[in-house]
Length: 204
Image (cartoon, rainbow, N blue to C red):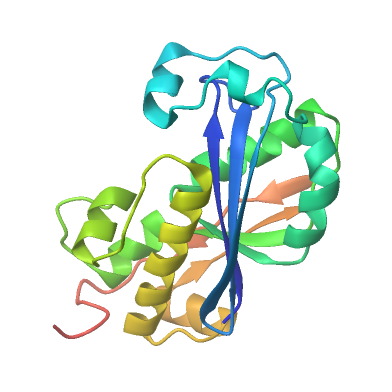
């Protein structure tokens, strides 16, 4: 199964302030590449709390391109692909709000949230944040840098899909009872899910 994991770090609490994006590419159930880019936010404002979280400082992005310049490189990578983020509600809203800020037409793609579907594959865990899931699954995580988070998410998703027997987007929808979200020119459609039986997806 092919997919791309995506992660953003932001300069402040505004969703249109990305300062880093990471993409990890999975082809035929194998991680083939991770790419990341530092981004100069349009307004240049960094919140102290955000710096504490990801460690990216204003001077590190001062000479980096803004998102609209980077988008010419990134769009061909994600167009018509299946993207997965851990807490997609955040990452996909960063993408949408930033595209809107620069008056850029949305790409066409599908997306899903590994935070959400992990609950169906590993039920009854104490927490489903990326750090906890990586610890439980013995995945190395250098947290809160976009490239590292996207790579760890890809490793987590591969383990999740293997555990649930998911080898295609059709399997994803049928096994997890989740319909992926969509972005398209002119708008987006959020992911939707059906109620599942309370029994575990898998034994053990």
